[in-house]
Image 1 (spheres, helix red, strand yellow):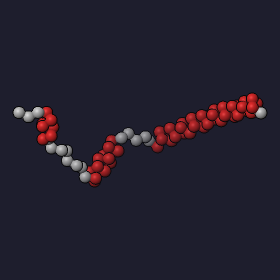
Image 2 (image 1 turned 90 degrees about the vertical axis):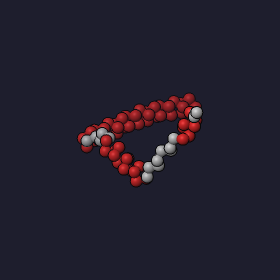
Image 3 (image 1 turned 180 degrees about the vertical axis):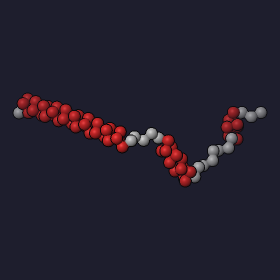
Image 4 (image 1 turned 90 degrees about the horizontal axis):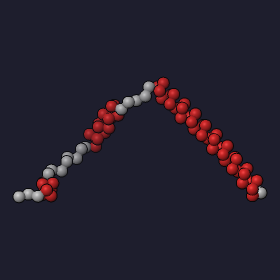
Length: 75
């Protein structure tokens, strides 16, 4: 009578894939991915840039305000 541990131990270990097979699998997966069109990529890049500029301006104004506040209180 075999136990579960014995059954698990008797199973063959999975074969190691070659490195070349790994890269072939990577390429196959990348081909399945949805890639944006040039127009979508440009539009999304502009959106990211605009959000970064707006957040930079907001943080800059807050920094300037706190700097002046601390100079007023401490100086």
